[in-house]
Amino acid sequence: MQLDDHAEELASALGVDKEEVKRDLENLVQYSVPLDEAKQSIRRKHGGGGGGGGAPSTKDVADITPDDSSVNVTATVLTVGTRTIRYQGDDITIREGELADATGKVSYTSWQDFGFEAGDSVTIGNANIREWDGKPELNLNDSSTVAMASEEIAVDYPVGGDADLLELEPGDRGRNVEVQVLEVEERTIDGRDGQTDILSGVLGDESARLPFTDWNPHAEIKEGASLRIEDVYIREFRGVPSVNLSEFTTVTELSTPVEVNDSAPRLGVRDAVDSGGMFDVEVVGSLLAVRDGSGLIERCPECARVIQNGQCRSHGAVEGEDDLRVKGILDDGSDTVTVVLDADLTEAVYGGDVTDAKEAARDAMDKEVVADAIREEIVGREFRVRGSLSVDEYGANLDADIFAESDDDPADRARELLAVVSTQEVEA
Image 1 (cartoon, rainbow, N blue to C red):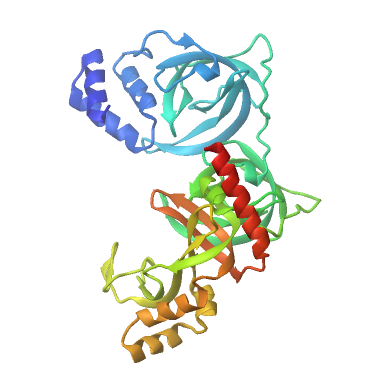
Image 2: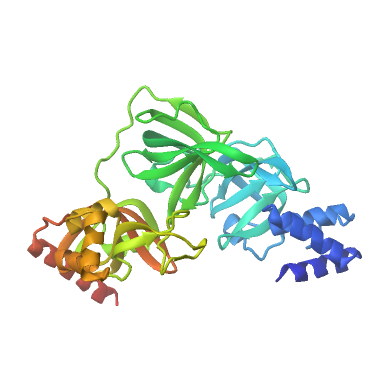
């Protein structure tokens, strides 16, 4: 249903002007207010109360669907996160996390503080339902009620939010991690209130490494520090989970250093791609081809995008800056991935820098000679590649940090491939 349809439905039910309702809806949605919450707010504004869908039904968590209007549910609070969002020009503090009962778990957002904490068993009345990432989510507002349940609700999920980095997924809220700060830098960005100082970098533990952003810089975030970080939320950044710290996040130095695994998990290409994206992963395969757009290229001086014929998609006609890049197709027999080498790795493969590449292109009067030279060096050979994998509708890309010829035993690789093929045939 389009926003216009929602406005017409609301206006008809409330007996008010549709255009006024539509303006209010557009304003609320613009500030990232969930549609159900926006409609509820408009109902209250025009004296329509909190109904709009009949009496709420009482359901187990597993039976809640995005088609439900509102529900009553009794569950145990798994996690509680706190952060601030911008709502109608004001900063509003919300609480969010997950609830569970014996049948399953569900995310929630609470637009006011009902006082519950992780581990509490609660009965929630009249929780609105919205769809989030294809799944239902409970929305608690001033029309909802929360009371302690008469009995403790046993659940098969961990309570409290502690997690290894490898366990984190985009959409997680109220998580706690114990990590070592591997990289950190201060940056100034254009935020919603003007220029804002933030910290960004990489965190690590024994399970994985992930990028992070600290939107309210904590003094304890220093390179090499081992920290317990409580109440973080997880967003997706370039196809991988990213740890986000807010003003409500607490950071405590640990007396015992957090161990970090120096190696990345090694996966087959298909398993890596099926993961949906990993910040640090290693694959081994044969370099089948070097794609167009490799070798000597030009980038926009404003956004660093590759430009064609002096034209940037975002900034139009620009004076391009020369750079080197490789985009290669790596195949391990299970699937393929596009491996992207930056200037430093490309220089190592090519055996020269940008100046050498420009000279070769001038002599041949053809930039393609640089890409051809790279093809001769790497196509048909097997490589070990470690880096950050992103997967989207355009395919899988592995931005390489390490690109080295593989020292694996070909016989072992053949046996592994045969085992994969045999398994696929059995499953088929």
